[in-house]
Length: 464
Image (cartoon, rainbow, N blue to C red; front, side, top):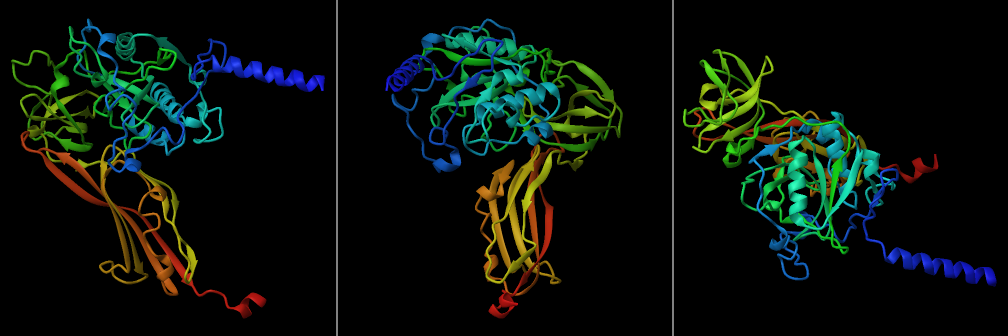
């Protein structure tokens, strides 16, 4: 009896001590750090909301940092983005649900810094996405606390300017707590306060790896119950190249994803910024390209005068911008386009249902639609027996979570041989005159699966 009372007292003491600690525990350098993350009812994706906004206590703007915690920015940079290896990021993937956002954000940072894809599970002390406990120490990252928002923003600019992606804790109009990776900033003007609208993020629950503006996504720094903001920074020696130099010129430019192989139609200037006028003093000449020289683009940029320039790299490795009117339309490329974890039927019984599965990634482009079609084997491909299409622009699709998963009624198929075809329409943008914008759409055949439907075994067959 005496032993039982002692154990109870000990448990009560532990509970009292635990209640005094903040939700996110910050470890010393020689210990593993465990951070509480989201639960299924705190992270609400846009798809789940169906367009509805959830208002937090205090009104829809209660998640924004108070203005009295901001101060004028005194730095020099206007626009900066870290170099992103999107194919590597696609290998890491996106958060499907659960509470693994910190693990994914850390995996993005470590993948970019180390040049190899690292799964979120490398930093998870739990068992899966629904049981996720991020150990920053595993990724050589350190959690810092700040009491003022401007301190966090200014430190973020310092880290990014040094080539370091960072992780921050945020909340917003649709989530009470979430972790994202910060990979750049824009429109940072000396004399004006920095805010969430100045920073570019990779969101673990987003559909693609195109950086999003933190403020436009209605997210901002989260002040925790203990009155501090959390910023997680890299302690390794690794750094990333910067996609833009210190000029603020690009902050007013529109950047569109576009990957294609073009050739110059005449001698063309390769510039450090997308501008060719003598008035654009920020831009410098990188090289003069000869007629017929190949140039692989990574983006289509509309400059401040409305002209379109291709950003990319020459065959000799020179990086810069070429006026689009100096190039051919070229051939679209689809880097990072992939289909994995495919689940399609091979053999079914009459009346048997089937749920399609798979993970589609569009790379630097976006799927306009994804289509499944079933044909009778040997019949022409102009009259499908069954057809289902998922419309909408997306860079990533998990089929089992989409309307396509069980859209085809396999149970209605009679005995016979069939062909199942999965295709995707991928759209890309280009400009041939440097002024107008053209959109191309190409149907890409991603997978053909032949399968059979057999009659159900009779009772006699079962006995045999």
